[in-house]
Image 1 (cartoon, one colour):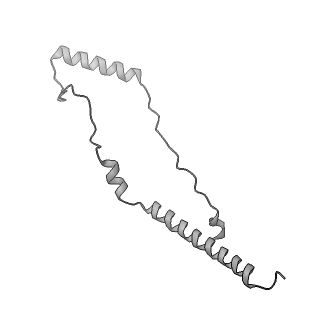
Image 2: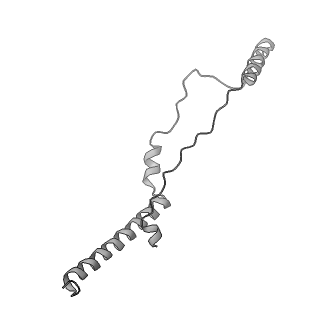
Image 3: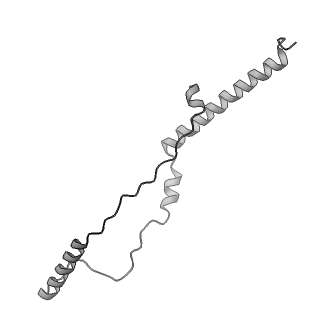
Length: 103
């Protein structure tokens, strides 16, 4: 318990997987598109020419409303440290004011 009393947690690491550009795959896709246009093959994808707009409105508020287990553990650890610190301070003040060893 004493070992964890002065423990400060490390920050979480931010990781983005690297993105690779494959010029061969891009050239292959362009060739496939040109061949399909020449043969008159129509892809099943329907392009509406509208920009992509993700549906994340309000998602952060929804996620913030639910408390995670890690935040509960952090709050519990913080409360126990505070209680231990208060008990130590009360004990020191008791010894300072009510004991006779300081004569």
